[in-house]
Amino acid sequence: MKIFVTDHDGVEHELEALEGWRVMEVIRDWELPIKAECGGACSCATCHVFVDPEWLPKLHEASDEEEDMLDTVPDVEPNSRLSCQILMSEELDGLKVRLAPSAKPETAAA
Ligand code: FES
Image (cartoon, rainbow, N blue to C red; front, side, top):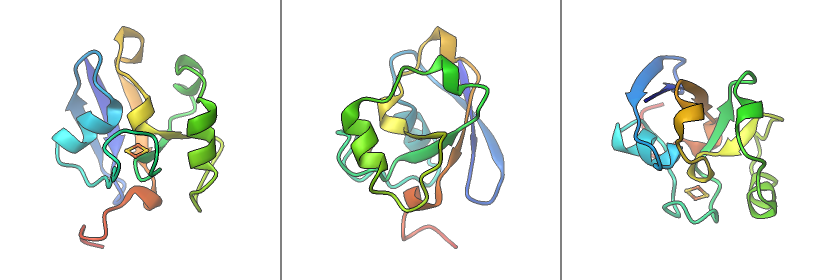
């Protein structure tokens, strides 16, 4: 299965994903720039992505924990999600997300 990830420069990447993996892990494994400081524990919000509106209804609702974390990011949008809270499954094959500015590692080139 695949996901499509648009990076901070607006370039779309097609990434091979595995069922049961977190979207954050897929992005990180393919070495796209994502901070994901807490490693998926839903406690940093630096794995923030914008989900393509067409795909939003296919995702499970954000937990209260996830909502609380999203409230802490400056660039939150109605389609904001934490990519470590999205588990890959058959229904999400082809998922499209865009990396949020707040997920950009400081070390990545501007
Ligand atoms: Fe920290 Fe997702 S990696 S909240």
